[in-house]
Length: 347
Image (cartoon, rainbow, N blue to C red; front, side):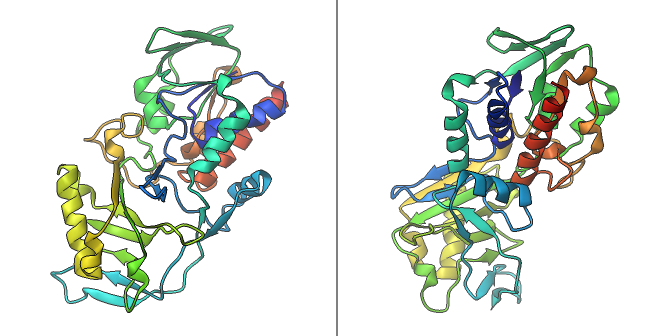
């Protein structure tokens, strides 16, 4: 069995196959595991999430996995207020934060689930920097990579985003045009997102009448949250930047971020010890074409992804294919579980 992609869905698929005694290899184009789960760590080892971050009690498959793996998690911290930032608007200011469904974060960073699954799968089964370019389906499935490696298997499970495999992998024989059309028009979660985080020695925004929860149509932070760790010993502010700033240099974006935070929180915002950011549109394994834009979650969960192809020799999986919270970590977990159930039923 070959699994394409070492994100959450690919790694969990591999772990489930291992539980059933089914042999496999994972081919991952990047030099790291995790896909769109990507935790960076600051000078004080403060976890700063550049990708998947939050989950809620409604994400039942992810919660079940968390309990199975005995991971620790904690509720997202919010003060009583939020700040709406638009210096050109009379609405600029601080307001009470409405009640909302609680959201949670992984203790020590979301990447801990990735690294734990990778250790359970075994590094010998994960081949990095193996970008798949061709899949030939006959009696056996032949998979070719960009460095001319060839792999043969009975079945392949593709867990990378639909738009990526539809544009970057050549299939022989060709897959149905209806599937290609939907895949190319399927929004890839995070493809238009830019995330940034600033690490601080102390959470000064919790002092006085201040808040680390910020929303803005103006930016540069359109959403910003308190990203202090569970023990409240490491501190950061993290969130999403306005994508209109992507053409600027990192230094220019950082200057605008500091200006915004200083205007809201005062000069203490300038005393950061580490700044991190990730432009997901610069990752060709996430954003296929910078000129293309899809509605958020467009075609996510489309039933065409779960149909039978090539007598079951090719299985399309991954977060965007799930019919339950597609595009989220929950969708990645559900799609992995369903793909393995389908395989075990046939074998």
